[in-house]
Image 1 (tube, rainbow, N blue to C red):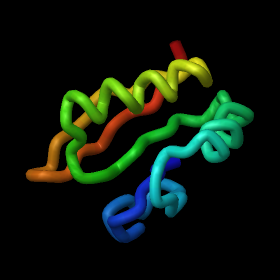
Image 2: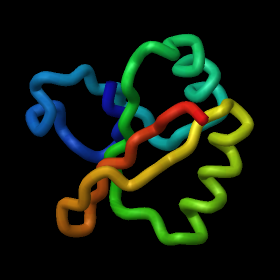
Image 3: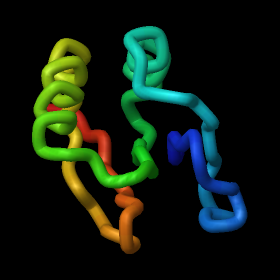
Amino acid sequence: LIITARQDKIFFPERRVLYAENLTSDLLKKISILSNESFYYYTIGLSNNDMLKLNKLLQYYNFKLDREKIFGKEVLYKISNF
């Protein structure tokens, strides 16, 4: 499952895409139930400071965010369990 606010599904035809403006607490609660899924977040690259803040939120739900692939200014992040 790829979570994105800005990109079209055409880039990921083999994956399910969930459109969400941000990774919010409500969204993280929902995906924590689907623990056997692979989750990715596709967005414009985050600054180190923004990534630290987001990882603090993710940590509360036993997730962490890692850069997977960079496409110019856009980045595919993997959301994985601790």
